[in-house]
Length: 267
Image (cartoon, rainbow, N blue to C red; front, side):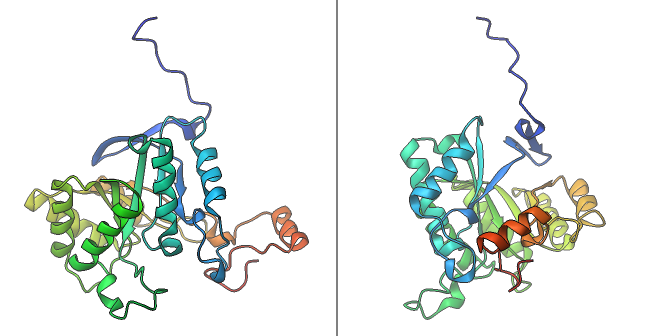
């Protein structure tokens, strides 16, 4: 067999690898959101997935894919998303075959009554980043995060305070790439300019809500092209608001309502 045989064509465009202009790693365009994994938050209408069901979901998504991009979030489902994903990857021995993204900024201690000083666990400052990353590494059973996202911009922390400690974790090998979610374009431009000026790791991914009700075309896409930032859309179905008549009828017949996390009405 020749070593130079061309690989088989993917069955669809979702099987093609993509690059961020600021990062050389190849990832698939389809990512698995970790909010679907975990057994907490049923009380806020997010549903629940046991450890066994979460493992089945992860197994199904991994089938027929050469690598898998997973997006757990540190605070999602009180940390059970990261814990289940970490145990699943460890069980299969495939950590290095995965591209795992997680985030910091939200307060993961909100539902923990034993912690009184909750303010130190949230926002984008250096303290919150350090606490969050250490906990994420433990929960995910890993020594490094492929992509760490700033979950939201808090407007109290300077760009310099965010970018410098993030780069420190890059130098330590605990984080490989950096991204940001739902931040103003001015923040992203300033952050990457700070990175250029001080030889820091650039932001390479922007994650934002993108659907027919929340377009990105006017400002985010031009910014992404200018800054060399890849786009990772979320909320493409507008929190379940965008669904077919057939799906809505199914919800009514089964009594299994749609997502009510953002709004009390799922229709």
